[in-house]
Image 1 (tube, rainbow, N blue to C red):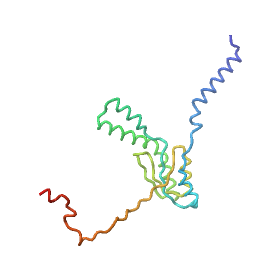
Image 2: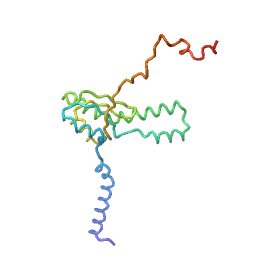
Image 3: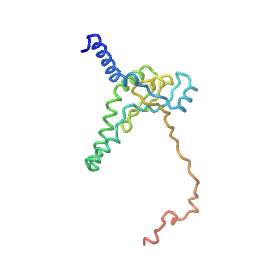
Image 4: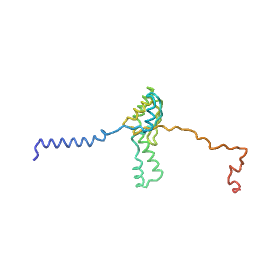
Length: 178
């Protein structure tokens, strides 16, 4: 027979172990990180300087698992399309509400110029001050922050003189089609 004190000790240890198992994942939750090259660039900016960033949310649709399920179900292309789109939109809907509210508030405060949410990969493009980008990266619902790419036009390879080019240059195979 166990004495009451031994029984209480075992019960206390069991309760602690259950508590650790249940609460450990939330205790180890980490905030997002800033991609290294972008972080180096941010350090060259003043805290109130604006920059555009891609904010990738932690909650992403598990397309790999969904794909396995759909293969097992022998889903049609239409069913696959509907379920994948639904999963992507659902992940964005679950996780973007809170950060959207936060960014709206920061927009009114002047720390954010604008933002655009995307569901295709559950991310947001945010234009904000350097210090605000760093605060966003520290959020638990953010996986990582990267520099937004810059769009630029491609220069033509060469110029062509319209006087010297013949019409047949543009209609290759035209003679054989007649």
